[in-house]
Amino acid sequence: MIDFSARVKSKLPGAKTTIFTIMSQLANEHNAINLSQGFPNFDVAPKLIDLVSEAMKKGHNQYAPMQGLMELREEVSLAFERNYGTKYDANTEITITSGATQAIYSAITTIIHDGDEVIVIEPAFDIYIPGIRMNGGVAKTTKLKGDDFHIDWKELTRLITTNTKMIIINSPHNPTSTVLSEEDMHELERITRNTDIIILSDEVYEHIIFDGKKHHSVAAYPELASRSFIVGSFGKTFHVTGWKTGFCIAPKKLMDEFRKVHQNVVFAGNRPMQTAIAEYMHSPENYMDINKMYSEKRDYFLELMKSSRFTALPSYGTYFQLFKYDKISDENELDFATRLTKDHGVASIPLSYFYNDNTDNQVLRFCFAKTDETLEKAAEILCKI
Image (cartoon, rainbow, N blue to C red; front, top):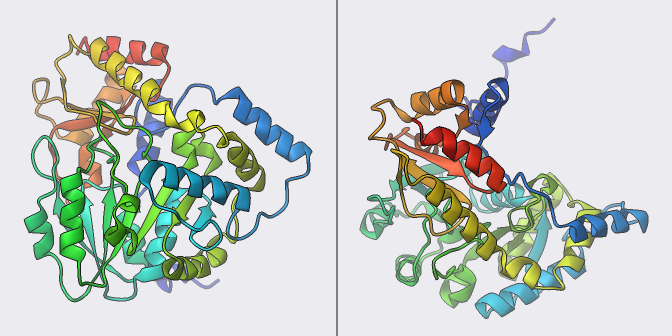
């Protein structure tokens, strides 16, 4: 028998099982409360479930168009025009994808060739750098600064070379829960002006934003919009992460190339889910008001944690809350998160996982997209530590 292991050259030789899988498995093994992986544990809107069932019963069970259902693309176009003042052509500039992860990978694949450089701002969601490397690209990283996790634009600018083909941004930001400001967007405009650099803007938490903050989509900035892929997630917006349905928006010339990749990766996304979401989006209140619900959950979790020795860092968006634990332990983040799961029964994610060099800030990320009962049980345990 031929030993193929010696002949297979890994594209990701250093890749390991993701921390989300590891911590969720650990939570299951130790019957711990899982505040690690970012998914809601409360019910989906009954109306949306009914719409999926209705779509299936009506026979919407075969392939959707490669670009996605036109009805859904039109709803996305209307939403972006309403929210950001920019009109995208539903026919040529919007594609429905099999989740945001596929959209991000396909956008990277569309642009990046061997030796091309991509600037990644850390801590960063864990799919960015592997996607760059699988396409032969080189990831160049800069780190957010301070406890407020702000971008050092001078440092980022120094990373730009003639080989820089893409900058990836993410706002509202996972894992830090920060939000890019208008000044940040103008800085991004300035440093990319008169270049051929493409922006990949991960905006999957666009509707989950708090404290009067505003989501500054690249769509609202014409200079940036003209060079940007925007990625969104119906799974995040409608609490249906398991449906793996997202979208990508870009100017026609970029979208033409994106679709060449998209059709050869998945061809098309889930038909009945697209049908249901399109109908559900007819009522904008179904997605425009979710920030209020998540803001209340964040505030409730923080109130429950007031008597703990954990220090809360500001959370302005997403459904994650960071806590420093330097008053409790001097352990590194992975060791402390593991012990917290095994010995105390609450699972979280170490922030160090989101850095290529495992930078340790003694900070853990907790997901508060949970029922009040789950948050109460978790906080009761955490406040005793």
